Amino acid sequence: MAKRADERPPYEQMAASLRARIMAGELAPGTQLPSTAHLVGEFGVSNTTVQKALAVLKGEGYLTSRQGKGVFVRDRQPFRVEAGAYFEPAPGGYSYELLDVGEVVAPLEVAGAFGLTAGERVQMRHRLLRHGGRPVEVEWSYYPLELARGTELAERRRIRGGAPRVLTDVGLPQRHYVDAVSARMPTDEEADLLSLPNVPVIRQFRVVYSDEDRPVEASILIKGSHLYELLYRLSV
Image: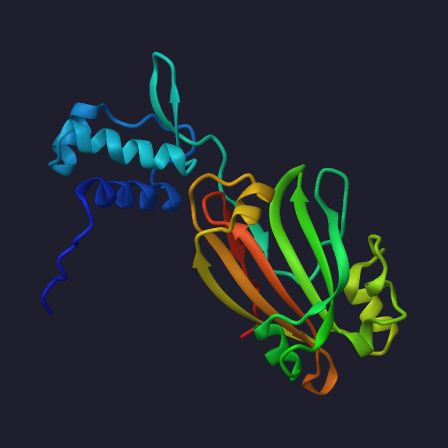
C-alpha cells in the first residue's frame, strides 16, 4: 500500500514526532533536547522550522526553556486518571469543587441516554475534580428528575459518598457504565477551569446503569490531553 503523503507543514510534522516520543516516554521528563543544529540535521528542516515546532510544544506544555541552559522536556510524568465512576476525597488526593446544581433542559445526548423527549428537564450537578490541588477534570452529571427529586442529588452541597451512595440508598446501585471517548479543542470555560494551554481535551460521555440496564446517570467528563492519561481496568 502506498504511503499517504503528509500534507501538514514541516513544523507540525516535527512537533508531532517529538510529541509522540514524549508521550511514549522515549524523551523522559527533565531530558534536555538536542541542539537546534542537531534537530535541523535529524529532521532535514530549517532552523526556523525547528523553532516553530519547539514553540508549539512549549505552548502545549510539553517543553520548557531554561535560561542559558536549553530546552527541556516537562518535569512531570502524565498523571494517569483512573476511569472510575467516583473518586473518594482524601488529603493530598482527589477533591471536588461544586460549581453548580440545578434543573436544566437535558442536552440532546443526555435526553437520548435517558429516553426523554426534546425539552425535558433533568437534574444537573457541575463539578471540578482536583488531584493534589491541580485541576484534573471538569464534570457535568445529569440524573432523571423522578430519581433525583427529594434526594441529596438536588441539594446545592457536596455529597458524602457521592452519587453512587445516593443511588444505592434509593435502590438503584450503579452496576456498570459505558464510555464514549473522543477528543476536541476545549471551550473557553473548559480551558479556564482546567488551566489549559492550547491543547485538545479528552471528552468522555458516560452513561451509568443500574439493575435491568436502567440508565441512572449521564455525565460529560473533560480532561486536558497534554498531562493526563485515562487508565481503564477491565475484566476479560
